[in-house]
Length: 87
Image (cartoon, rainbow, N blue to C red; front, side, top):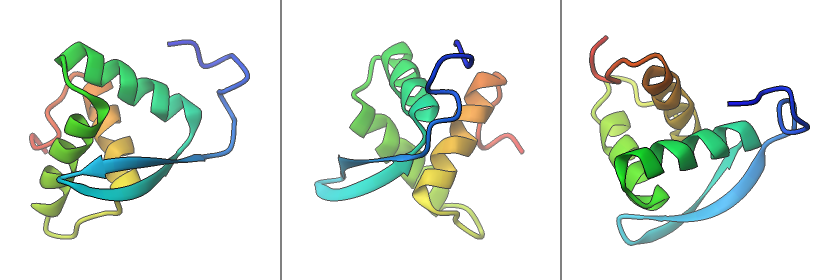
């Protein structure tokens, strides 16, 4: 993943997404949107489905973070080759 392009330090971008049948918006930096898209493709899932899975995991936490934070954390764990529930 190239972090030296113009998106490396671009401000967050808000996008609409449907999770479990309801519309919501998520604000992520373009780099995280690219990573999310790549992770979804790798798993053979639509982005909405992957975000729904991340949302379920986040809600199981003792102190659930916001969805955007949960996505960033999940992507970091994924990039490091760790399960988000391993820690």
